[in-house]
Amino acid sequence: MKRLLKEPLLHFLFLGALIFAVYQWRQGATDEGALVVSAATVEQLASQYRKTWLKEPDRATLQQAVDNHIANLLFAESGFAMAMHKDDPVVARRMRMKVEMLNDLLIDPTTEQEVSAYFKENIQAYTGGGRYSLEQRFFSKSVPEIELAEVLNALQNGDDVASQPSLFNDSYVDASEQQLARAFGSAFAEQILALSLGTWQGPMASPLGWHFIKLTQRVEASPPSLETIYNQVQRDATDAKRAMARKQFQQQLIDSRHVVIEWPETLQ
Picture 1 (tube, rainbow, N blue to C red):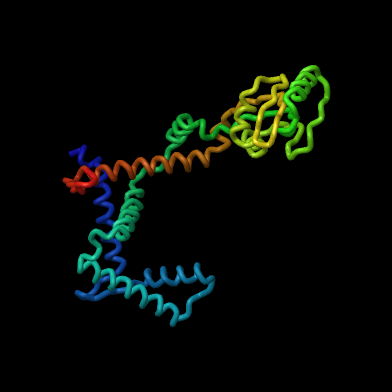
Picture 2 (cartoon, helix red, strand yellow):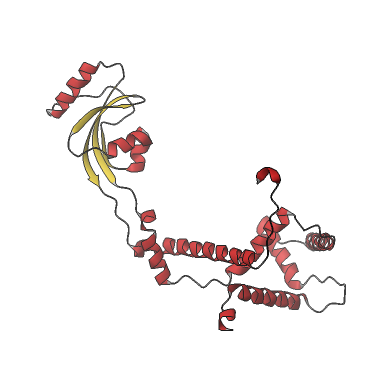
């Protein structure tokens, strides 16, 4: 019995029944067959108009909204009576969305312990890339190989060699991986990040020409403290918890039914 009371599916059914009862109570007592548009519903329609048009609706406008609401209810009622909702993917998706939102109400708020555990499990997602400083000299593809060798020798001997005109800077200071990727392209930036420190290396080919690069500083990435990004991690942890709860609830629904899939012969 205790195990039964802990079943989320049972909780969901109870909550659904409770919300339905409250909805019926808010609609007020009606004669059989009557459709009553409650004051709460009219106020909701008026509120929607205010948010959309940023002004108060007059009586005629509000009456039009109420008439449209009634028509929607009656059309839906007629469609359900004719079983038009069956096997309709649009209706099914809409109902799934509503049921999932209802089931979300059963999820307990994310605790500090859960936020901390989520942060530890996903710490790489909150760790920014490293920072890099480098010197760079650029030469076009038309420069002969022997001259490129002379350039490398001069740079390694400490001589100041000027780059040929280009869109590249001669130096990049405290640049992020993303900034280097924008400057040189992702593939070439990965080669730069793999270089050893303090030595001119090259020539390294890019689609635009030849590069000589000396990586002067590498600061490895470090994660921020949880306190500095707590709200963000809390939102992420809550989203992950909700996604897991929805996945579990979906599996419970599937397990509660005997499902038969008739595969077409061409897809077996």
